Length: 246
Image (cartoon, rainbow, N blue to C red; front, side, top):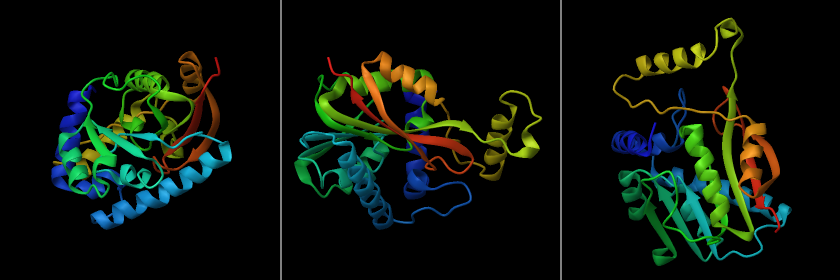
């Protein structure tokens, strides 16, 4: 899937039910309005900043980047901690929602990303880069490109924090199925149960590969902590990353 197809999918989801599209899971109701959505973002960023404090980074709180910002759920929360916050997303419809719900004026801006890079931003321009439940929808080849871009954009004493699934847990009944047949059947079953709703793809990358990508782009993994953000059927982690000192 390329950025253009991702944009089409998320624009359609935004039109259908934006709040559940952002945070809902199959079988769960998810947030029903903007108030619930943005409250969840405040709690999430509060915990993330507490963890950042334990890691001793970032050294400054001038600028933050929210990658895959959607309607600004986390961007708005980050503006409570940083002087300037930028949210980027592939969906113009989601960004329109984000601008509509912006409470911080010029301190918070939203930018459309239509390529597999972040060329519009200069090197070392962000003290903190955060991404949650976004890279799980991006094919691994693009995830690798974005991780390299995150490290290019990260200040020398900054912190990158992102969530990424590793692999799907296979239920006992499906263990006899070969290769990737079970994930394909699971996607077909979901599509059949939700006719007319765009199917959002899910991807995983093993921690060993993530670590190699990070180190190859000039970073070092400070922590890889288990998270259930992708749902109970996935093994996933939140990675905390710093630049390797030169």
